[in-house]
Amino acid sequence: MVELGISTFGETTALERTGKAYSHAERIRQLVAEIELADKVGLDVYGIGEHHRADFAVSAPEIVLAAGAVNTKKIRLTSAVSILSSMDSIRLFQQYATIDALSNGRAEIIAGRGSFTESFSLFGYDLKDYEALFDEKLDLLQLVNEKTKLDWKGRLTQTISGKEVYPRPVQDKLPLWIATGGHVESTVKIAQAGLPIVYAIIGGNPRYFKKLIQAYREIGSEAGHASHQLKVGAHSWGWIAEDGDQAVKDYFHPTKQVVYAISKDRPHWQELRYEQYLEQVGQMVLCLWAIQIRWQKN
Image (tube, rainbow, N blue to C red; front, side):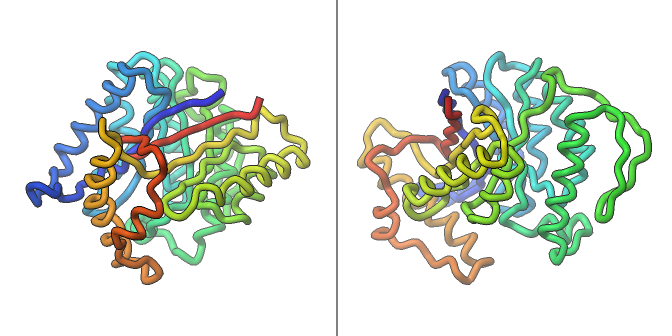
């Protein structure tokens, strides 16, 4: 089974023709309208990512998704991603269980470590605990997704003694995916846990991920997980236009702006040249803002 959808960070990149950017408030309202349109045209999933920067409008995807849940009927609604390392696992579960209620069973969570680090200092976390925070909070999130009444002894998280967590989702459990940029170690850990995986393909050749996906399924199977548990998602930048050549030309400016903004914080990123950009353009330009494809091995 293949599912097709779009996701966004609520980018506020300056428009090429005017040099002006939408305000955060305008972008957030646009996203609610996009969710409703995506539902009407039959897309399977709409995802919104969490950031805490001036160039992205959304810091609380769950609120925007909740607004989009009310006037939609079929589309699944997910974070893309929730920065689990700097969030409270219980609160995250409650927020998406609430979206599940509003949408009557269409909420999902994609959790990640976060490729941006602003949220750590903002919410009082130490970057030296980057990996340990994620692992512990993921364990707690999985536990609350399984059980209403919790007994939990935390090291970097709270200790919980016999407390019940509500609301519970409409679905038996909230679908939980784990996002990764393509690190081999992350792929191995996610496969061993039997959790669905989402690869963020934001540069380079997508064919590189084929071997990772094969390894994920083999390792997951060896760990005793059924094939229906080992779901794979792929996310990539893209743009839709009626004319492919024009789409390639139009998409260069916003892509260059985003890469430039990110490269200021990451010395290993370089300014995007048009020739490099063309090397990453496929035969088909497939999506608006971002495309998210998810499939399951039958």
